[in-house]
Length: 118
Length: 115
Image (tube, rainbow over all chains, first blue to last red; front, side, top):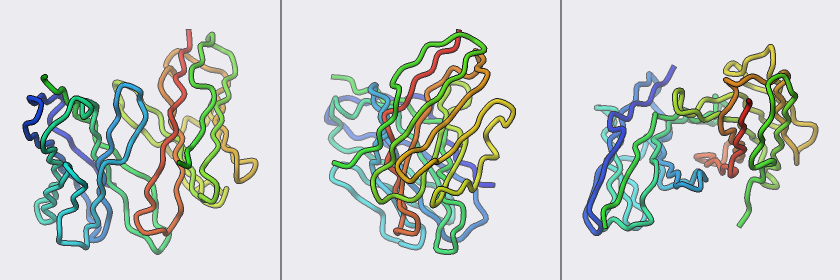
């Protein structure tokens, strides 16, 4: 079974600065997907970014980027130019790779609560 | 924007009562997931459907929980009888199987409080 570990329960960053959230995972699979989801106080789960394990290039979405280290099974999220609206819980998640109709469930880490300091 | 609709948003009930939570997945999505979120356990998968067929309900307490998809536009999660330890936020998510990453879209969740 796959496991996802987020070792930082809480992080804080000054507005406009950069912060990196850590995530490690354990799997015996060679192909898979990794995701970062954001959960603001409204509790809505919002996809921030995703990475396909077979792609070497790190995914980026505007101010959000990842550092994917497959050999180390590490998947960190970097938020640049932090904004007040980035304050939320951030969850790292793992998913097995289709197309053999493998289990499509997401396995989540325990989350990191990010506080933005004005 | 297409969205996953969950009802109710909030539910307060007494121990022993039946609770039914409903989810309308995004039109055209063929996978539906139920997750439970608590402070202690985080996000746990309760049930997973593909094309309305249950594929994984290993995380669901079978004695009191049941999950069904009567049709492609409705998924239900029932708790009978409810217990205080069932207090949590229950999320429904839907996706399109085999569509690349099958990115899941989550509903806003149903917060359940069992007194």
